[in-house]
Amino acid sequence: MPIQSSQVFQAADAADLRKSLALAAQWFIESGDFHRLFEIRKIEARLDLGLPPLPGGNDAEGAIRERLDQKLLAACRETAALWVSAGNLPAAWPYLEPIEDRAWVRELIRQVPIDPDSLDSVVEYALHRGGDPEYGYRLVLNHFGTCNAITVFDSISPYFGRPIREVLAAQLVSHFFGEWANNWGLDWKGDQSSERQSIELVMQNLHVAGSSDLQLGVAPCVDATHLHSVTRIGRIVREPIVLQKLLVLCRYGATLGDAFQYPGRPPFQNYFADSAVYYQALLGIKIEQDIDHFHRKLAASVGSEDELEVREILFDWLVRIGRTASACDLVIDYAKDNFGELGIAPELFVTLRGDRESLDRLYQHYRDRGDVLGGLLSKVAGMQSGQAGA
Image (cartoon, rainbow, N blue to C red):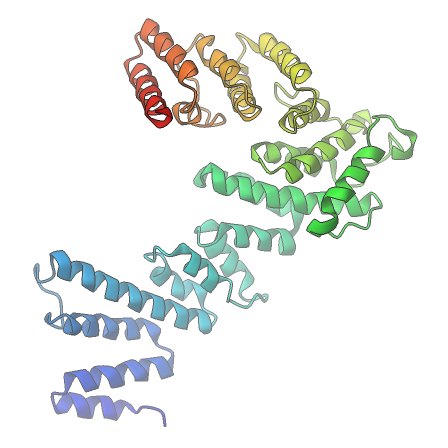
């Protein structure tokens, strides 16, 4: 039988605080008023620890404070779960934010049924508020399409670290590759068991730019601007199977007619052809030839407004293909002190942390320039590398 409000007041009239609180909690659960339920749980938590029902002064410190915080977090979990079960993720969010168990938060968010009424709010709290970016971005891809997903990725990138951006970029690439493959005539299902074999088949059919079966000069089978954007966003991806997809897309893009060869920023002026060189080296293909290719691009950029961007792009690329000494040269040979400010290259000293020789070279470089911070950071990173190897 449902709780009646009169039962709560009867217990309160009898000064039975515990009973009145328990009845009130049940009343708020049954009425769906979970915000007020949380207020009841706060009082109960204090009573459980022998504290006054309402806070005042510094009545909860040290170990008591820690135990109280744990009880309050448990109340947050309960309240959030109830709001999600009611299909109200925005109401649940204030209770989800303090919870450190992000796996539990992600699991709870994914329990919200997706329908036209809930879709926008789930995307908002999963992706834009960071509750479950991978899931939120998948919803964008599946429900709003590639064009919107590209725009969203570019808008949210400054707010996420590289690991999350890598995951989202890989999702975008795989989604778009599936569209391309199906439009190109493949029965592409994207299941992992056949994915590698299918990509190898595509690579064989696409091995020569200019092949007659590509029908060059006609409209591409996907939006060429999307092809350009996806292969740009994919540069941070590390997963080999996704890099293979990017290489296929770039090789395809290189076969398109002049009307679809949009110029890129250095070092990708010949956009699709240069991007194919970038990706094939990451897959271990023609590395020495590819390094020479981009060294010529770098030499052409020296002294221009594009030089820093080119150096940061190539620093990241060289580190990823195992050429940290050459990456270090990009810093040492640079005439200015603002390397890294564009945020394209990963954090310099963390990236080179395992390369003691390169860090010693950097230390001498910064010492010669009188750069105190750079010198100390390279010295600390070098010392840490020595300790790790000891």
